[in-house]
Image (cartoon, rainbow, N blue to C red; front, side, top):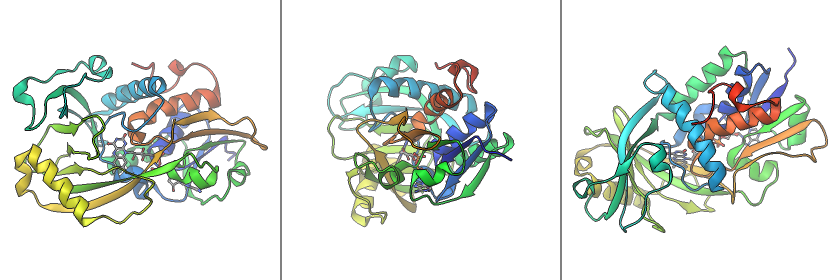
Length: 326
Ligand SMILES: Cc1cc2nc3c(=O)[nH]c(=O)nc-3n(C[C@H](O)[C@H](O)[C@H](O)COP(=O)(O)OP(=O)(O)OC[C@H]3O[C@@H](n4cnc5c(N)ncnc54)[C@H](O)[C@@H]3O)c2cc1C
């Protein structure tokens, strides 16, 4: 079978891109060093939240499109749940522009956690990433796509496999492209048993050096987090884990009795702006980049996938799976 497109990378960005292309009729193969369950994406929290990612205007469009797609998938057994919750700040500040679009509202004083002075309440997708990645993988296979283990040293090597290559390699792009503007922003999470929490909480205090968030899944709660620029170490830090637990328990006292089930460390692929474009100078075949999604790979995944499909296949995004953006 001839392959029209090789997507390099099997994280949420690569798999979404491959699904979008395959469902639009292309013959697609995903080639990746790590399988979906061993990617950064598999370890993410994960919630729809445009965090640590630029540029604003394109992020808004990609984020809205992904929100719509994730809402459509909610409660269909693929790891997506629409949850109510709040984002709160220790200072008085304005809500993000997307709050209105999502039908959210400002918090009442009684909804603010101790020490918080402003906040907003809205509904957003909370995603069990291993389950969701499995869904994308199965969806790709159903649409005729294939997944294989391949480690590329250069994108030129990938160009031998198909006339079109889409580069979705996350932090791997730093050496593969190469792209020195891409760096890792290390993040650590603590997974605990769920003491009965169903609403998410996220600290959005401007310029805060600490992250505090609570993402409830069915039996577990993911507690965050840390953000350490240019740290490539994947070992969990015991002091950081203790501090994350203490910050989250101060917000929701029910967590004090929760058991710690595990620790996760991942590397956010951060870049001054997401790179989603065709590289015209590619010597052989066509090359489209789709990497550098920072702390928002899930949040932007479907919107970016649809834009890549439009670049690769031509035509209007309205013709592609997922319909028009919200
Ligand atoms: C602690 C933490 C919490 C997070 N929480 C959220 C959240 O709540 N919401 C959200 O939207 N985002 C969140 N993120 C960010 C999100 O995880 C990333 O933006 C996202 O995983 C990036 O996806 P990706 O597919 O680009 O990269 P990855 O998931 O890293 O996948 C990259 C793929 O490329 C492959 N690859 C790399 N180099 C090569 C090579 N040379 N040859 C072949 N294959 C290669 C890898 O093997 C892998 O398959 C979080 C991140 C962290 C660390």
